Length: 102
Image (cartoon, rainbow, N blue to C red; front, side):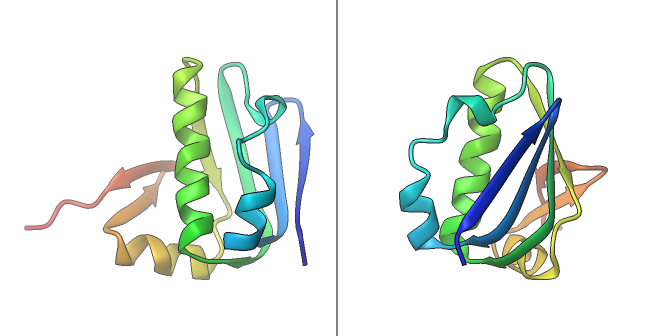
């Protein structure tokens, strides 16, 4: 299943698969997928994701920030949250952050 993207207003909805094979097909990140101010990234219909997919999502956020924007992470699937935990990342209040170890 391929990665499908739907851009509407300030939202980008991703569905399907975001694995190493899919990342190769969407590199570099299409400029049309970036928002002007805040990009609402809806991942509710994302069915597969691996570490390359997570890296691609982090690069998407970086590209959004380079355009002086921000990104809201919405409806992260459980598999993505598990990967984030492995890399000491967290999404709280829709923002990606590094978890602080005590």
